[in-house]
Image 1: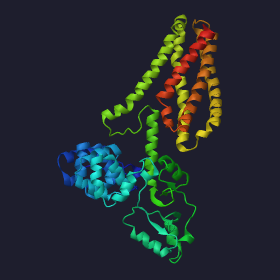
Image 2: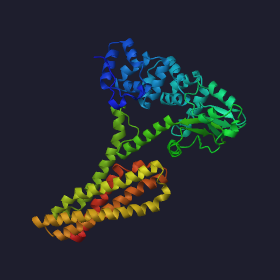
Image 3: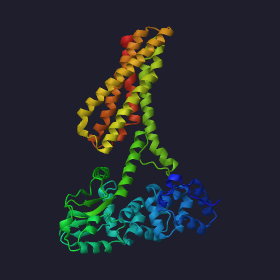
Image 4: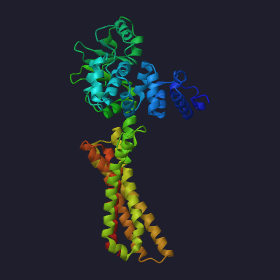
Length: 468
């Protein structure tokens, strides 16, 4: 069967880079690679966008992926390597002969080159780095924290002096057209290389050739220093609708720029990491990871959950006499545990989301506590009324001991549990964020198990006091 791209009707007018890669195409390419049909494989892959090529390589298997990278031209291999996930890219890069790998990395922008080198074994990276054309810039990028603006930026940009004119600035753009992939704006510097403004390409093209740049530049410039965290970079670019963000050193001198494509990757990675941590998975799991690596990321949280569940079991066992005196209490254990866990997860998820987007600050603890407490009271009253009514209705049809007292006990317990779980779930992420700990760690097993234990304890204490 001839390999094809699967295009839905609403995708027909899109660019080739936006096409979905069909699973049949992947299977056909894998078969052709196995049959050593290099010409046919390259013929199929020639017109695909590097992002689609990366998707294919990630799904054909590691040996086949290594073969495809070996067959591709240096330029195309570089584009594909930049699109691959970090761990998978490191595995493939480690298998490429050093001379070819050096040529591939040399084709990358400095930020991508630094990312690839950071994933390689130290001894290999140290041998490749001196051979790169931009090795000084790449070495500087490697010195920054990979999750900071310095680690995210590229050193390719177009800058002009504030005293030059439009004609000179336009010529500077032409001179850097090959080395800077996307030129969204010009950065204007003073004689000390400090950033003093920007000029958009539209403004540059619409201005007279003799106009001095300082007369048309925008001095209200948003910039960051190299040590700013990448999440803050993403928030700034989202808040001010920026396509590119200049990066300066502590003295205000321009050292690089961050483009929107890099920030989109950051937003996706941070969102995936938070979702994984909220689900009890160590952040950073990828579909190309090995079984052992996935196990290492999940097992610790499973053990945390197991420890929490064991403590909840100990609480139940400690009220053995209460259960023996009224076995019907056992029926409320899953109700209390599920409600406590759900209430805590709801409030903690909103808190984590708000912290990640910058809508909630750690200083909002008091205001947030009041709001969550109010919500918990209202939810608790409604839920308790429903549960109490259900118990009374059940008692009307079945013979149970003290249905009114049981309904009263269960309703009060549920109200208290919802209030406590909601408050703890909302406050824990805020406290963690205030002390510099990832608030996503507050959700998942931690909130669920702690609220289970608390809920069971409250329920049995009230049962001993009001029902038995």
